[in-house]
Image (cartoon, rainbow, N blue to C red; front, side, top):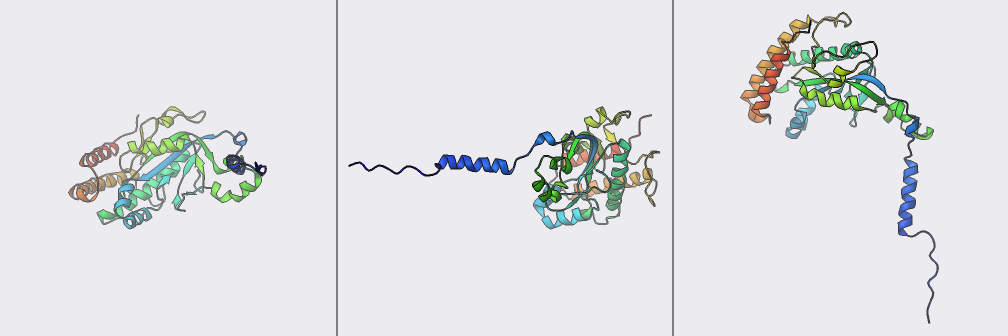
Length: 273
């Protein structure tokens, strides 16, 4: 006698997976057609050099050095727009529409950080850094929020306020690798393109210490040409200390020599006439 199996009730295992997957897709639904076109802006990125090695040797030392810099590391929007990373650390991400605007924001950062370097007495506590500038489209959190349902937009409002992405950010981040310590490299995007009725950057590196009629001189700051000479001299002394303690820094001798040569060349460059 054959006993008939009762008819299956409900979806099978595979269908359960597909139902779950469809629900998840709906949960995270995002309508990219509602995002407005990205704005072309200048992006400035300033990065601590050797942070990876520092953290692999001593997280406490890395924290102390990063904390000693008033602007931290990261991309250098307006003077008020400060983004925070996943660890809630302050990261100045400046993306501005005009060349003079990005220069006006990044230059005081370089002055402050250079002053910190000069005034730090112990060489083991001195921080090396460099930066990059690029030009191109950048999306900010409010633009991304337009693609979300109203409920999700409100729920994630705070997180979205810290979000920005676009090719110019990546280009500024990667471009800083071409800069010497305390120098600013200019990515080819900022040397090839510019806002309407303006000209792109003229050189592969921006000489942030030069006097310019559109740039304010920080209150109380010495002449920047003198500051950069003192900075260059202190950098040369610091490279000599690094060379004498090379074993501790995980730094190839060739790389240190390259940094020294680049710094000497950079701080003696003149603007094109």
